[in-house]
Length: 322
Ligand code: ACO
View 1 (cartoon, rainbow, N blue to C red):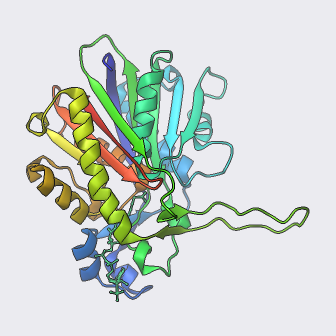
View 2: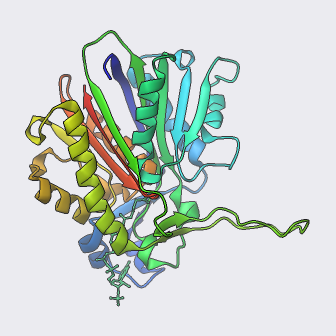
View 3: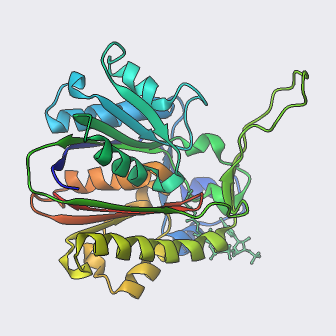
């Protein structure tokens, strides 16, 4: 797909930093264990801002960075597995916060877990055949679905949001996406929704929490990231050496190390921030992309590759010429 450009980038992280030492006080874990098994040192969790609030904060930064007005946006796609509500969509809440209720906007959410931002980018890039300017967001408040007594999961995740503005422009730059899903993974990674109620009985049902078979997810992740990366390079007719920066889903440094060793990727071309933020699911690639841009690591003319994997199982990748 050409004639698509990312015009602006933004991210937002909630204020409450939680260190590994803080977690040592609530579960049987250690800073050493968490760092050596995952690479994570801190994560941030939200106390008073829901997914639409942190999304809005990332969105206004992306809009400002793009130099456009809110009114220029006619497509809002939010990828999240921790929406404010089951309905209306988080994208509709973001639309309202941006003052776009009475404008002609299509707004909806995408659920593809940690691959969600890349799914959203691919959908937006295709929808820009008809729409003019897309706000694409990856955002999570995973803290609200974490079981804080489960050391297998509570040490891994964090909250945050990232956003980009993508527009149709008359330029000769390429963007390619690859996405796949392998449905039915026997609940190896899930957040259960409310269960069915007995007819006519007024019982409130609680929403579930993150459940994960870590070792199975680890094996899947290494295979899926490698496949997603190879497939998108094939589509773009590029090799690993052609790429200036790789931005992988920030789940676990050990997973990423396995992949770069297997595919012989130069570690200096990797963008990593999982040590600071933990795994922020759909927000992870979006935050890393916006942060890398802010640090001046994504220059005009650069060729970058984004890679995600997550529950579903889903996986996805994007090749973008900046
Ligand atoms: N602190 C201390 N010990 C722990 C902790 C903890 N936080 N968590 C687990 N352990 C223990 C286990 O109980 C086990 O003890 P045992 O041997 O006495 O039974 C031991 O550590 C080893 O457990 P493993 O699960 O084998 O540890 P592993 O080295 O595989 O690391 C991890 C676990 C970090 C979860 C790893 O499997 C992983 O990263 N998997 C992928 C997870 C992931 O990326 N998930 C996100 C997917 S994206 C999305 O869609 C949300």
